[in-house]
Image 1 (tube, rainbow, N blue to C red):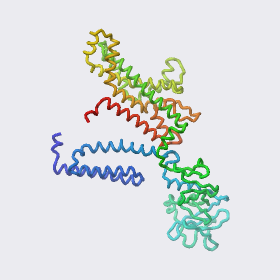
Image 2: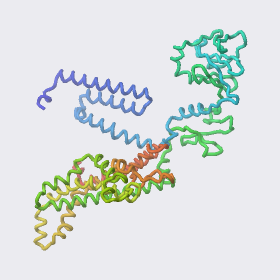
Image 3: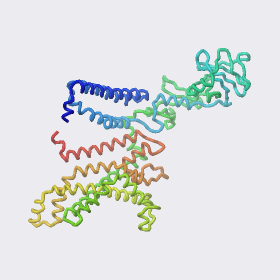
Image 4: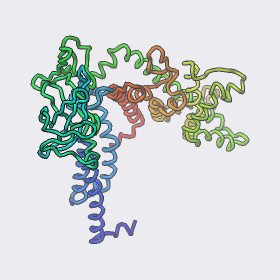
Length: 513
């Protein structure tokens, strides 16, 4: 520390400038990479960090922030920004089919609205250039008519204006210069984007380097009215302000893909108004609260009783204490996977030991019982340790005074030790409740949220808690509803945040601030 305190003057200034220059270089490269990927929010965050870094470390009146700034940056980038992003996405219709921007959706709809003509007209194509622009010599495979096309239009050529090769395909015309094989290979990515209008609303679209087909545009976009018209079916589709173009005569007839659209509180309203979503959500919510509460009660009860038993002088007490904390020392994911194997129907040790054939994970109540048992195994050592410490913090004079007054051991436990323990450990009990409220690893690794009645179209499993249900909503099925998952995440954030604030107030750790 003395050496660090003495590191001042010109060497320190050179080191600071060099270090900040390296940080600036990294942030600038990240900024341009983000803008190249059109990740505007990420680019804005990086730019803000870049400006703040140079301001804090080169201004003279920001000395305290020089030490706090790295931690503040990590807090903002990894906590505040994800929360703000989740809040914003919860107000969007953001799901499978509604993932891109509106402009991209219109482009894709116009592309998917292409259909071959009735005759399935196909052309042999020679790709080249005319007047410096991409062009093509098109030979109808049936009629052998020849056309020269550019992106502005197509002209039919008559005999004498072109020459055929040995395969009967036009390859030469005035002002037309065919691409070499090397040039064609280099323009491979452009071939699929070229279109040569035929003058009647259709155009020749290259399908490969030497073949094009005649396609007709089914959809026509009117920018003035923001409508898409299907000219072949006579239907008109208008923006429904929820991320899709919908048929003006039938609102349920929507075009896909749609786009991410701001729907205000639509996801929250949908969560409680749609019976197909509300039912599973309420069921999962009730089980989540029940699971967290029962788990905390069981873990505290077992841990407290073991702490009481080992608080007395017993033979081999140190050995017992070492054994009891072993589940806490083993990585939880490993223990969960071992328990998953123990309860396996065909090869599990539980069924093998008792000569049974119980499908533990395919019965809702048995699966819930297994989850509670495994979580008890994982959590009771923690409560044993903190209960042991809390018992030693209770003054022995209280127990002695109660004994002198004639109190029995059960009365001392019920009226003195237990109330004091609950008062001391209440913040830890609340934090444990919040932790188990979001205990993703246990549910996902042990049961995967199942069993799930997929035959009746249900997505929520019997053992799903809110965090695993949110994961399934966002990523666990063919239809990923990221906006709804963000809305559920915000409800979870509100619940856990409220519990955390209540816990802090009860523990009075913020009274000095």
